[in-house]
Image (cartoon, rainbow, N blue to C red; front, side, top):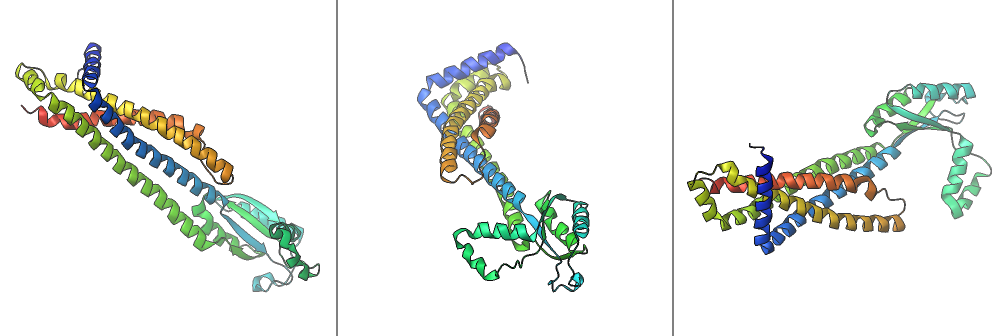
Length: 308
């Protein structure tokens, strides 16, 4: 591949002249590429947000371990109240389990206070307790990775002084399956859209080459190399890809910013990726992708016409 800078400048000039000469077709091509890349950008943003949401939910998954109490029916508890030292030892043992990120001790009084807050205006339901607290001391255990939750729960069950362990097994399994489907499904959809974009650019360049097929044939007959003929068309494909990517990200970025503002106002607790966290990198990535896809599409469309 020749790397002569002057040749590339000439190729860019020829590509711009070709696009100006058939401005209507070039605008239609840019619009077509922009639509394809805009769909791709929207899918990427959706996939990023679903992945972010799944990660946020995963971070909330925790193991709940209830400690033995006097009225505990679990045979391993021997109906004995744990001492403060025993509780500290249990916390230390849990912290030593691989994959445990954090352990928080929740006393029965704190648990009852939290329950009162959760019931809110319906807290009169708890008046039937007559001042008694039926709750038990517990541990809230945070895992480094949601996939380690089941193993951590099993290890906690074996610790002396722990009565029951709960981590929502069905919920965790469903969440992991959902997260995996999002990630693999997003990758598959993005790959399909990339292929569709290559075909779109390829067809666009093919029309441009077809309109100049006599000129290409003459250049071949007078001894022009394939790369000399290919270069301006390749630059045209790259420019179409870049312009289409800029239009796509301009529209997508504007729309995404509006959606984020709306969601933040209407559903403030909904986890969403902020525009400043993703749009700049995605714009650069999409411009590079547009240029690469334009080059690939051009090379594909030129193969047939260079066989003279």
